[in-house]
Image 1: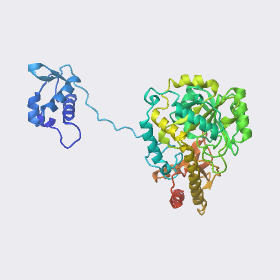
Image 2: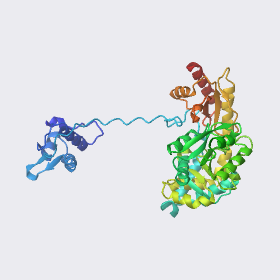
Image 3: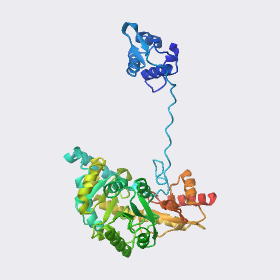
Image 4: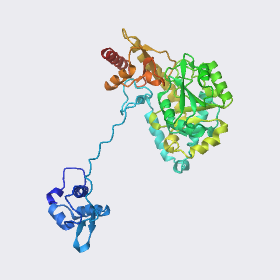
Length: 473
């Protein structure tokens, strides 16, 4: 092997010793250096290549440690005679591109019409930064020790207090389990009360991410139709009366926005009590209701303790916190505590402590009041812009709250193809038909509005969307 082939490149970020190591290894694997062949001494090679002896020594030590070289004292260093010709090294393959999710856009920015994210421009950054400093200055032993797998105790207390006041749920802090987002709550439920193959009711249409998670967990989901009164409980009993669980979004159905009527709430609870089944209540954004007070949670009517209540901070604060919570019946606390010990838990105590302080100081309630007013305004901007379009194909579905709207499309339009075209154009609404388990005739767009910052910006985005639809057709 000639010395010029070993000469390193200076205009690169790769350290010289690694360049030398890779070139020797390549020469061995390609057969240009044979087993038993002697290589130059450290001193001679350093002199020939005009590099430091320490650089050559580091490369040689690495090659010796991996078995490519053997040192023989005064006889010098040779390629290991135990090596037969190695297969040629193959180029390192490029990592596969991440699959594009139909739920979350693969981008670090918020795109027009992106659903499921709060208004980042209205997040109380100054208050949050101040709390961060306070939390660091007053580190408690609970924040430095191994964390409780059920979550940070002061946050569990704050959540129990908040739910009693705002959602009509009477619960103790021991019933509250902090989880890593909605998925963490669903995992804790599946590991504790359910098993693969269990049959469960799922709203049709229903929350796409929850559907995908439960199917991957091995659950057998039975789609139950949703109408203007929410989940059709009678249809559920006809299709699968012995289901082990039902997943519902009763306060603000995802994605249609309807509320589960009181008669159906009572019928659902009666069914769960009679069958000894579980109701998983996903209360993902009930805080944002623009006509009257937020509806009471289904859990507040749960006298027989069959409801597992899931809430999240993703919509009311930040999805990046990855914090949700699960409220379980008193009879199930010890069972869930045992399961929590064998799961990763809610993660770092620090963000939990910050959210706890944010709630205890009353800033959480003030933030929610501010956001209700802001979202009501931004929702109106989107509704006005859509209704003002002449000959528009989009028809707004009336909703009382939430941070998205559902715009219906004529059945002849493929909303999935339209979503793909819009994604390429920098828009991020979601195809309504994707929220069905069975193939659906209904077509529409699930559109977020939380991050529009002016009526003009909203109007311009809607004009671009309308032009895209007409051009695509």
